[in-house]
Image (cartoon, rainbow, N blue to C red):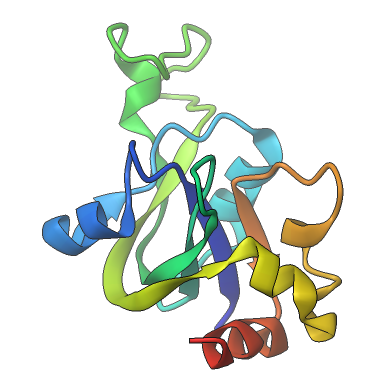
Length: 150
């Protein structure tokens, strides 16, 4: 099993949205490295730290689990979607997604500030300057350290 941190803006898709839907495709990712993580590395059963970004208090809001492995992101084929890609075809899709299922909403958000204060989390891409990826691998030790902050 692997561990991941996946970022979403809570006004677009929050841990509460996932809780109410129970499962959701992680669509609309248009960064090649993040796409490659989903396409090549994420497997059913992998655990996800669900991170609220670009908000007043960014941080880990809960947990999700990968429940469906990589498949073509349908938004790339929809000309009405903001994620439409005219170069993508059904025969040769460019963008992929996984599906995640709700596991847990934390009683409080584990803030980015708290994460930055923990020495054992200092190597996480999340706390590195210039790191903007919406999906990052997390070590088991980092995952457990964040859970210990709950």
